[in-house]
Amino acid sequence: MVIAATKLGDAAGAKLGRLALMAVSDGTQLVPIPFQVDEKTADGASFVYPGGKEANPEAGNGRLDGHDELVFMASDCAAALAPSSPGEAPLWPAGVERVVEIEVKDPVEPLTGYVYLLAFADTAADPPRSTTRYVDYHPDTETVTASSYAMGYEAGKDRIYFSSVSVPPAAGGSGKSFVDRLKMRTKVETKLFFSIGFDESEWDSTVAAYLDGPVRAIREVKNTLAFVGIPVAPTIVVEATYYRDFHVAPTAIHQTVNFPSVASAAWFDAEIDLNDAARGMRYYRPRAGAAPEDAAPSAFHAIDGVPSADEKAIDPRQPPWHLVSGAPGTMLWLMELPAALVSSTDLALRDDAATPEPPESVPGTIGELVYHIDLMPLPVGDYQMRVYYFFPPRWRPGDEARWLRMTTQPLAAAARAVALSSGGPASAPPAVPAESAAPSAATPSP
Image 1 (cartoon, rainbow, N blue to C red):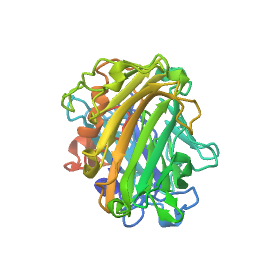
Image 2: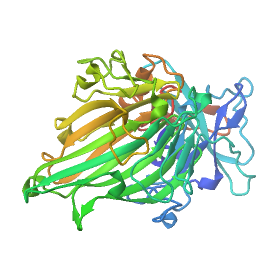
Image 3: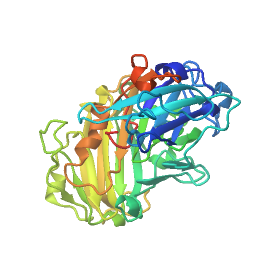
Image 4: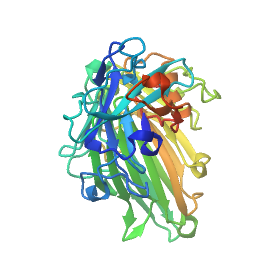
């Protein structure tokens, strides 16, 4: 769950170091749950990042205000806090000055949960905090470890692409990486009768800044690709965000190249290439012609490194989602492309270990899904896209529906101030609706 500070009523303006987020454990007792407040710049355009080459801690003020975001897991919600005895208000911890009750509702399933944001006086003892962490970012090794997955990048090289993905045994996987790398291949056929091509290792990428909390980590990565100082691909800024069970990459694309004026053809391939550990996994996608909300998958394609007729004949139109599953674990992903690129994007499935496609760590294409994007129709301008990678523990066909729902029917939240002296939550002022929560909880139900 992600809730803006402006929607938190009485808690707005509180010192971050004096906040606690708590949930009910047995009807009357509150226990701390993991949370974080991610400060944002005054204009809301960026986060306040404490780490990285372009860290900007001076942009924060240490208070919950403006565009700041409260972040917690919806799965940590519990029942509403009951009075300590009939007719009495709940017993709040000593030193509490303000309390905000946050109600979280699933728009599809009849599920509702609650958490309580407490602001403590400066003179009170330190607020209670949970020691649980759902995700960790390690900048020295460029790895992210979360409860349901781990992703790795090339340490010290600020690469645009990830080079390992694994699912731990506790989440139903083997703990071994089943991904070779995310390939990013660009080719431009110029009007001067020569062609230039680039791969993912040639991008100029920088991990500009990062933040690392117990509920989510964010890496801001800036990427450019140029030939003799001339841009040959759009500038890409990725706000790579990692939660307990999924990774989402909101991406800003700044297109400055008018390709028709300089090229007769230009294309970009984004390819998720698997490795030898993926042999025996299965690739699924929705049935041809199925509506996006129809979760029933097609017959699977076996990933074995051997090309087959059904793989070559796969529908090139972009489906709502893709999924690979097997002994190494499960990865479900979808790509939300700018409208200008949807009609110029084709897909292919390559499963041919005998044909190298360098640069790569494991020769050949093993269960490689290819987004082939024609750049010629893309006008100069700014665009937004988003990629989700979900890791459903112990997936079974049909389970993907509730994960995908996070992107189309997100949880909703409302916040209300709680009177400390009498009545408790039941007699509090009317709820102030918070914005619908973006897909930021690891499960789509509280």
